[in-house]
Length: 99
Image (cartoon, rainbow, N blue to C red; front, side, top):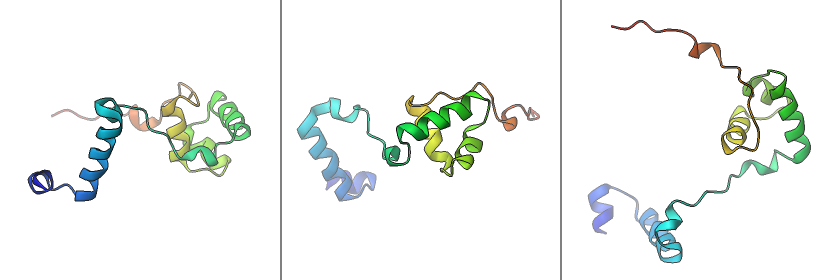
C-alpha cells in the first residue's frame, strides 16, 4: 500500500509486478514481450508486405494496400520480423528554424 500511495500506482499493477518478480526475479522485468499482431501477419501476408517494402513503399502505404493498420506493420518492422526500406518520410527532411 505504501507504493500505491507514494507513486499513485493502481494496486492491481503493484500486485502484477510483485507476482512477476516472485516468479522470475529481476530478469522477468527485462524479458522480451510477445506481440499480439501475429493473427494478421500470416507468413503469406508477411511475404507480400516485405515485397512492397522492398519496392520502396512506406509502411503506411504497404499497410493500406494490404488492408492492415500501419501500427501493425510498424510493430513488425520494429520487432525485426520485417525490414523497412531506406526511404524516410518527408517530414523528417524538413529543417525547422532554430531560435
